[in-house]
Image 1 (cartoon, protein in one colour):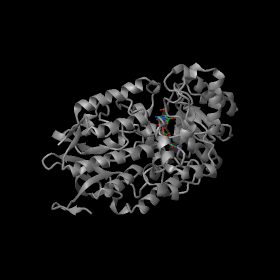
Image 2 (cartoon, protein in one colour):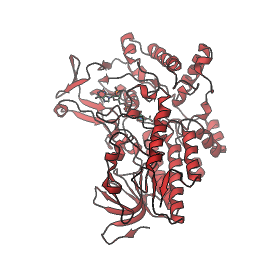
Image 3 (cartoon, helix red, strand yellow):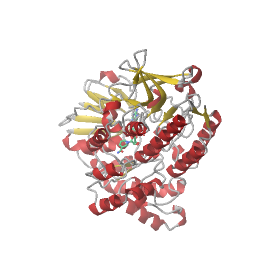
Length: 537
Ligand code: NAP
């Protein structure tokens, strides 16, 4: 499929970075065009997020039937999910199954991290080098590096003094970890922590949960998928997928809300809807009304509803107050999981409020915070990721005139449609900043990007064009559009990773585009207008 070149390197039409769900589909689409492609993956197998995040309790919080590849009805029908919210091992098996079923393994190089990609303007090709010493020349470079794949371990004084084991949820050991009978400290209370905590509490001697910011957690009510529901979905997968794609976050059409302000109806009606959604479980909790994420007054109703639930579930009133968040619900990502708040009723769990003190230092067998020292055998950092830009900028990407992407994005990510960066021809980013990405069901966003990029490449090849690249003007207008849409919501109002606020010195900028349907139609319109806003050569 690919040619050897004189330098001893390889030459292909397309280099794809990452063999997670996005990279696998991209490879499949490129091969369907009859073009050659190679995928470079730093892990030893496919799966991306689901390869690395093997922590106890890890599972997806988008429903399995929705969090499935969209491109093949046969695949969709033949794969049987065992639960409403799939576990990490099942998601990893799914990725492996897809790679085998579509014969993708042959074109993936594992244990091979891309270090540098340089656009050679003379030959109009990308030159890519990897950690395993490979050099590859390609017409196109596509990043499918994921949004939450650069784990963030905070800098804590005297980190190295701790003699016990230290784990990060985003880099969990492949061989597993036995924590039985241990005293464990967990730092962080985001979506990863709220899954780990209930999963490990029963086996621990004691768990200290170090909380800097309380988090809103809504139940999943996980269980088997009702067979009549599954049958109805399988009867018409196309309309199931299409209906989900009409939702702002590209999933949850069964739970579609009303195009109505929560402030325009009696309070009891809003409460009833929240109660119904709480009892249904899942990420569509805030979908009942059109202003829960745009009006602080409407948002407060939903926030207070969850706080009342927390106070009811957690028996110790001091602990339950500490667990009640103070920021608007949804401006940091809402977490979904079962048994999180209940864990704080267990005798072997202590919530440690570090909102004022932070963690001061580590001792040989302890965490020190506030005026106290907490003896621990092992520590788990569930402290998140350098989200969205971290995985992209971990590669030294060099565009026209030797300008690096890192320099270009010094004040935050700039691109057009999230897909293309001016000064970086024939370069595409999948589900990155500037696209709906992390605010959506990833499979829908991945499918839309893979299809758009492959049609674009096909069009270039058939028209014998050699370069495509966003213009600076369209890029600037797009950056303004993304931030303008966000400014009409409650999203910018707290220190979330959507804004880069969790990483010291990271530029603050709301990164994802809000609203899958309007994004999808914009991409379509641009394609139909012969890639308006792009420079084609
Ligand atoms: P996260 O949401 O960024 O949470 C990190 C936690 O660590 C926060 O509680 C944060 O507190 C705390 N933290 C960070 N640095 C700290 C420090 N120096 N000292 C004390 N606490 C610190 O990370 P995550 O839980 O890994 O989740 C990231 C995203 O991954 C999620 O939002 C979600 O999109 C995705 N995810 C999805 C699933 C799923 O599908 N089920 C599961 C896990 C993750 P502050 O809030 O104060 O910064």
